[in-house]
Length: 200
Image 1 (tube, rainbow, N blue to C red):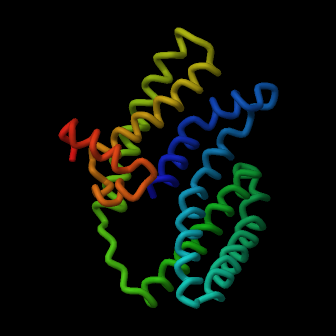
Image 2: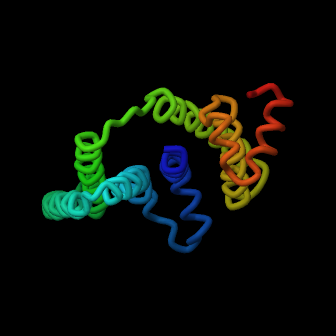
């Protein structure tokens, strides 16, 4: 959630500017990128859950889940892509549905086999709050920079600022426990700094 959610929202908000930055001569397709960005969060969560299932000995479930997702994708491709008003966007929508189905099946299976004690506030609500702060601040800054510097530089600076704001929001919301931070490289030094700042 802490990695996939900001990547998803950031890609969705800055789809146009990112395409213009990477492919200035072929920057069309921002809508497709915005839709496709929704697959990021489901893919990351699905991979994490699949690792847990495989460690638990449920090797077939990830393959079955993805197989069901692929079938859904195929069906939606056949239905949506031929519709003139949707067109190629239908393929992106089908991809999102594919990963959503695979994630849902894997998550349901994990809950049945392992007793999960997930704190919704920590794993869902706080990351959403942090991402919301990041999205609002970074996009506002991007709009302000447009009148001062080039679009490319505004995009790069906005993304860098988004990373900084998101990191500060995660720290301010205390999403990580002190013990979890200490387990990271240089974590003890980071904790000492946070304690001096009276955040922890």
